[in-house]
Length: 108
Length: 115
Image (cartoon, rainbow over all chains, first blue to last red; front, side, top):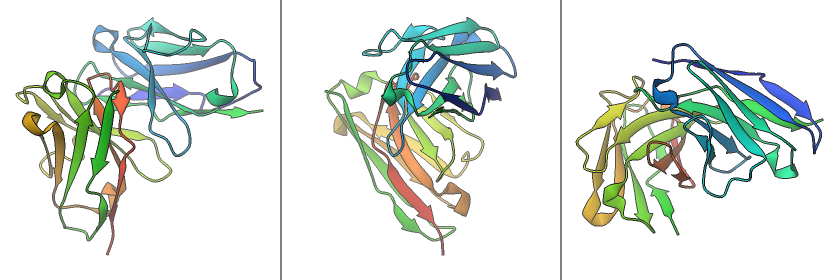
């Protein structure tokens, strides 16, 4: 099973600032099948990025994903109020699919 | 518009069974892979099961293997999760999600396992 470790656990930033979230895998992610999700309180997760760097339908270009192999990054160029939430990475390249433990982006 | 609506959650005693359903609309259900993902109260996301469009490929997380069974009825545009031998640690909101990349999610249904 591939273990995903997200860092930091919590990121305290102000609106308009840049956020950089990390996801590290215990072994190489098959075909870079790595996704990022945002989850707001009381809501289902929403897909942001798939295939490590492809934006999902309707996702604004302030979200970008990068990385390959075992190291992946989600960057939010300018934080909007709705971006203060919890973010999860997930690998779906080899069963069992696994999620990271999450990074909370909170308002500073 | 893609819609996924889960149902069937509730309170069940340890050792009991429950069957969750996910009604799909707004897309050709038979062409899409589906997943179940759960989230314990205040915790992170846990993927638990996947089924291909033709249901000839099925995967489970180790935590539910042998106790949960995923299935689908393409004629009814529905996904199911049969949960047996339930434990307290199965208490969670259960989501169905479309495709391997989980591009659409339902609103979830709460399962509480408690005596």
